[in-house]
Image (tube, rainbow, N blue to C red; front, side, top):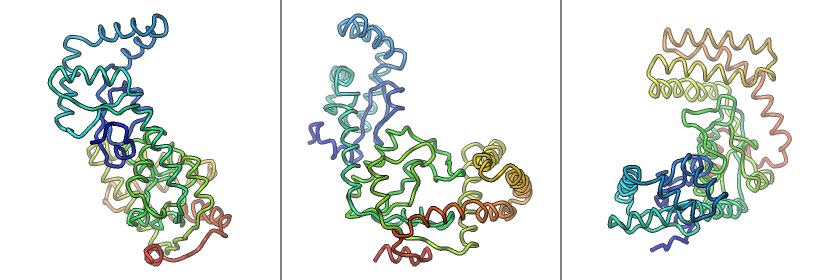
Length: 356
C-alpha cells in the first residue's frame, strides 16, 4: 500500500484524489484524477487567511471551525463520505498535506472512515509532475509536421508513443482551434502532460510540431527546448484530401458538437460565432479587405448549410484561406527547419515510416 509519498505511482495510476482546497486554488492547478470537495469555500478561506496574518494560527483555526459547523459541516462530511465510498483506493489532498487534509481526515474518522492523505499535498504532486516532464522530454522525439488538414493529430493519436498535446490542451492550435471543452489553467495543463508522459514511459516520443502556444496554454520550456532539436517528418497530402479532412473536423463535427451541447437553435448561433471568431482572430494578417471578402463567403456558406445541411459552400472561403494564409505560413516555418526533416510522405507513408 502506498503510504502517500509515492507520488509517481499516485499520478501514473490515476489514483482518485479528494482535493479539499478551496475552488479558486483548484482552478489555478489540479491533478487529472482529482475532484474538488473543499473544506472551506473561497470566502471562508480568505477570511481565515486574513485572520492568520493578523492574529496568528490559533485564532485562524478557531475561526475556521466556527465558519464550518452545523449543517454546513455535515453536508461537507456527507460529500466526502460518498467520495470515499465511490473511490476506496483514493487519497485526501490539500495544499501541503497540512491542517486541511488532517482536519478532513479526523472528521471522516469520527464517522468510521479511515482514509489516507497525500503527504506534502498538491505541492508535492506538482513538484513531481514538473520533475517527470523535465526527465521524460530528454528522450528522443520525432515531430510530425505538415500543412493544416494533413492529419498530423490523427497520426500522433494512433501511435503508441504519441502524446497528443492539442488533446491535453483542449485546443487544436489554430485560430479555429477551440473545442467545446474549456482550456485548463497552465498548471493543470502541465500536470496533464506529466501524467500522460508518466503513463506511457516510451523510449521515444511522437509529437505534433507545435508553436509555443496551444490556445492559451504554453508548452513547458524544457519541452520546447527538446522540440527545437527534434527530427521532423513532414506529411504531404493532396489539397482535396486536406479539405475533406477539415470539412469533417471543423464543420461536420463542430456543428454536431454545438448542436448536442446547446440544442439546435442556440447551437447554431454558437457554431456560427465560433467560425466568425476564427476569421476575426486573423483579420489583421489577412488584411481588412480580404477579411471582409472571407466573412461574406462564410455568411453565404452558413446560410447554405442551414438551408440544405450541405457544407460544400464553406470551401469557397476555406480553400483560399489555406492557399493565401495557412499554407504559405506553414511552408515558411517548415523551410526554416529544413535541416531537421528526415522523411516526407503522404499520411499513409508517414504512418508506415513511424511504425517502422
